[in-house]
Image (cartoon, rainbow, N blue to C red):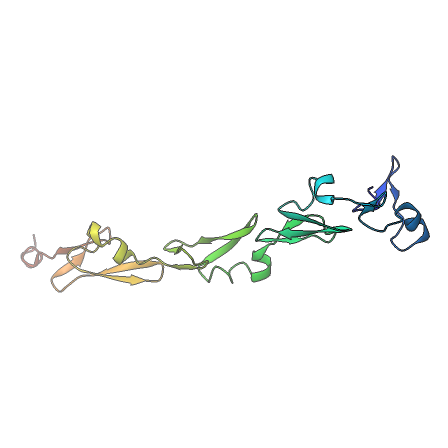
Length: 181
């Protein structure tokens, strides 16, 4: 059965199967590939690991593998292997200049630099707008928040200066500065 279906070898000594089209193959498999004793073999049932990471579909005299997304049929046509999208698309190409592609089974993920994130339905690292996101928390209180790639900065109005934490503005005490105290 092995030689007449998907096998390459058989027996205790793992003897090579005769090549399809040869006299020895015709003697072993008179009906051709996919048949044993003149009956079609359902390779999908006989070989339960067939088309791993995909779906096996039996056909008369053979079978086909339909691979899950992110997988491709291997060179033997019996299993679906993970596609390494990062190698195909480049480590930073798919995630943008501010991210690194990481292959995972059936797909890939983007690891983003600080201040960048992957937004839903996108696969590239995009800038986080801290000003918009942190508006309710009082970011740049007393001043104006300006988003920058991967970060933000606070601009303080005249007579104010940036706090040490860089996240809010405070009034400059001009009287204290001029009096020397």
